[in-house]
Image 1 (tube, helix red, strand yellow):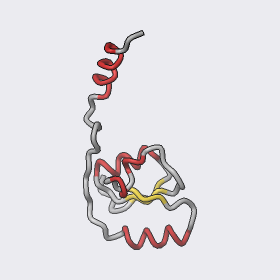
Image 2: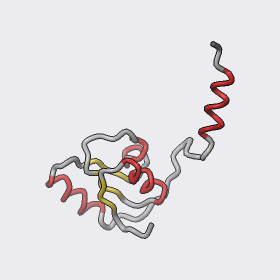
Image 3: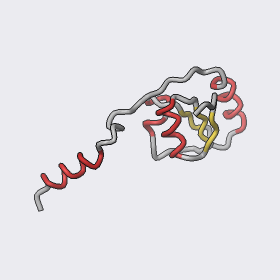
Length: 91
């Protein structure tokens, strides 16, 4: 929780970084969690395995301040929304 910067290949850690506001460099070319990317308001940037891109993003990110974000619908009420949709579904 006190990390200044995180390097990961984990989608789950991308999510945690978004909620905590920890700047994150993701060592992958894609993600199943686009809401975690900086371009969508999150805390992560994708660098894949490109060492030059990693260096560039590290230098840009290392002094970045925290910006905690709770993306839309990350409110702990997914089960309620799913039940509502199931009950309203016509078979």
